[in-house]
Amino acid sequence: MSLTVSQISKTFGASIAVDNISFTIQTGEVVGFLGPNGAGKSTTMKMIVGFLQADKGTIALNGISYEQDAVKYKKMIGYLPESNALYEDMYVKEYLSFIAAGHEIKNPTNRIQEVIEQTGLGLMQTKKINQLSKGYKQRVGMAAAIIHSPILLILDEPTAGLDPNQLTEIRALIKSLSANAMILFSTHILQEVTAICDRVLVLNKGKLVANDGIAALAQKHEAGLEEIFKMLTH
Image 1 (tube, rainbow, N blue to C red):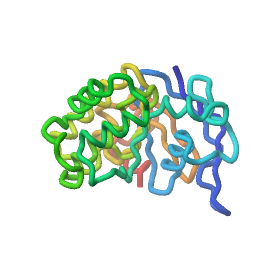
Image 2 (image 1 turned 30 degrees about the vertical axis):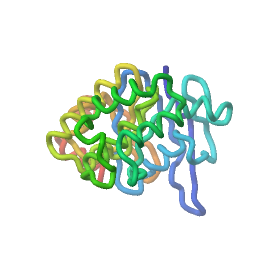
Image 3 (image 1 turned 135 degrees about the horizontal axis):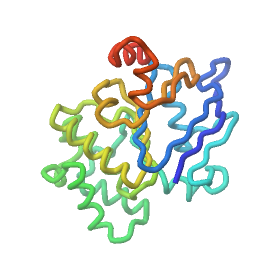
Image 4 (image 1 turned 90 degrees about the horizontal axis):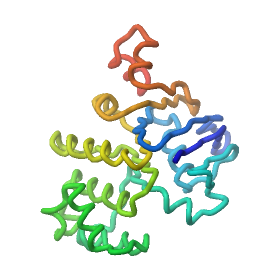
């Protein structure tokens, strides 16, 4: 299984958001998506998910593009956007039941309980979402993103707002999910990259300027990884 992004570009008026970038991701990989604000990371993610259409180039997941079969394509993807919009008047378990129904999941009760346990929402499942902390809301978003067992998981700042214990648990979850999926996530946290990434993609001004493993990236520069990270993300 693989995601293939080939020579995609996207402009908004006179502004070039993404400029002719290409990369692939294979099952089992956790790939960090780095770059300063405005580099084109979120735009690229939205094109992969199908929320935006590329002006040029192609995106294929297991050989299927959004244009060929939008329903089948979207069923293979789980997406946690940075905004993590939730129906906050719903209870956690109720919300996950609603999401499961949308995906037409068989045996939804069992699957809902699985993702509640995976994301550490056991004590929160009977609470309204608007009663939760930001960190637990992030977990609800993660649960909704994985409930249909996607083969590609797109995470935009997935650990924002989590406390140190939650960070450790969500990192472990992301790593475990990569056994059967491809994972692409954006972050501004160096520890995130070194803890769980197999490889990093770096965008700057819409261009892909690096596509390397962590060790290989560090070897290409005299500076330490921390200095490289600062250079690439600011």
